[in-house]
Amino acid sequence: MYSIMNQFTRNYIDGFMAEVVAKNPGEPEFHQAVREVVESIAPYITENPQLIDQKILERIVEPERIVIFRVPWTDDRGDVHINRGFRVQCNSAIGPYKGGIRFHPSVNLSIMKFLAFEQTFKNALTTLPMGGAKGGSDFNPRGKSDAEVMRFCQSFMTELQRHIGSNTDVPAGDIGVGGREIGYLFGQYKRLRDEFTGTLTGKGLAWGGSLLRPEATGYGLCYFAEQMLATRGESFQGKKVNISGAGNVAQYAAQKAMRLGAKVQTLSDSDGFIYDPEGLNEEKMAFVFELKNIRRGRIKEYVQKYPQAQYFPGERPWKIACDIALPCATQNEIEEADAENIVKGGAICVAEGANMPTTPEAIRIIQGAGLLYSPGKASNAGGVATSGLEMSQNSMRQRWTAEEVDNYLHRIMQDIHSACVKYGKEADGTVNYVKGANLAGFIKVAGAMTDQGLV
Ligand code: NDP
Ligand code: 2IT
Image 1 (spheres, protein in one colour):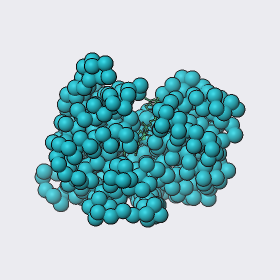
Image 2 (tube, helix red, strand yellow):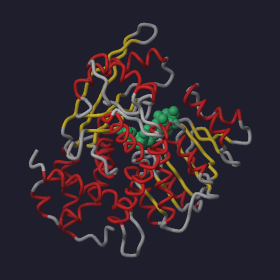
Image 3 (cartoon, protein in one colour):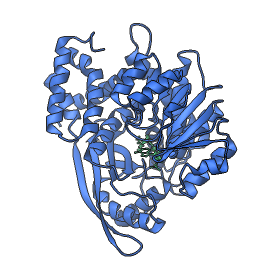
Image 4 (cartoon, protein in one colour):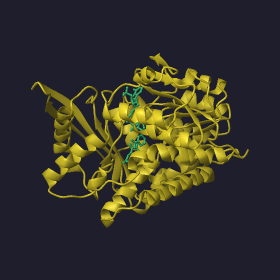
């Protein structure tokens, strides 16, 4: 890539990135996400000087609005805690801001900005009219009671409600925010605004949620990976699959991969991973759902129940040989050594369920070895796409069947795959999904921004 890029383009990238870094100091995840996109689209930009004149890229990396706020709450003993809340409204060129909310102690401005930036391109790829945003807090839900989580969510929403709305900004879940949290957030939104609208997605089925939204990110990931594999005449059938994470995305990726005939060997959390050489099955998945979603336990408990499995504390699943790797936990969870292990183990495909789980050096190793590799903004877009379908159902005051939603999801993942092929096909016939996803997303957002003038 570097060698075939002309010097003008190279200089453009270096100059642009130097300004981004200077203007946004101490935000390494944001720099990383921006650099990846700029590397992909720079040749296109330098061939379209009106985009340079209009400073489209400078505008895209500057969020339209960032809200940072205090979130005070009391624990069950009556002690006072203060957390920091964020909403980064990155881009509304193609629709209302849309993106998840993350509750995790690591949350900071850099992580919020990288996620909102990625979301802008992802949402453009879904074919649905949604702008890009992300929000969250450094609140740690782990070990908190339901009552504590509720009080935190109510305090968080007391400020956030001024900045969102069904035609303005529609939040959803992400790490640490699932059905329980969306319920508490929605309840407080409704109470303060006195309106029942589709302002949040991922809602319960009885109060405006869409069938298949919980499953959508993991299922969509597998539908996308199926398309990737098909370009090489391959499928999930009989393949060994390693999955990281044990949360929403990981659980449904595991269920779908298994149902497509794969042997799912691993799951993980931030304490370690489990390796089940016999693979997951429906009964074991039911145990995982109960363990993680009802009891809110840790993945190491899997080996107490299924002693043929092994637990590796403090390690990641990538040292176990597999055919397909599906990182579904968090950013930068596949580093250089992990990528080398994945390649050495004979893998043919890495498809991202998490956002930016692979470091740039690791991506180079994986792509350099000729593996199929897809960035999260393409392969995990099924979650936000189904959120878009939930918004449509809310606006129509209707509810679609699971089959209807699944058909839409299938079609959307196929369309995203086609866009990646269209914009990412290399001269040798292989598909660079990073280039394809970034270029397809950028062209759509940049076009909309150009049409709407200098705003
Ligand atoms: P969950 O909170 O349901 O699960 C997150 C999982 O990842 C947990 O097993 C968690 O382990 C693990 N994890 C989180 N942080 C770390 C860390 N720093 N190191 C190691 N493991 C970690 O979140 P989701 O499944 O919803 O999200 C997973 C990823 O998918 C994120 O990158 C998210 O942005 C992305 N995503 C989510 C979508 C959705 O619809 N939910 C849509 C598209 C992308 P532990 O319990 O130890 O923290
Ligand atoms: O990263 C993501 O795409 C999500 N967390 C889902 C966002 C959404 O609005 O459904």
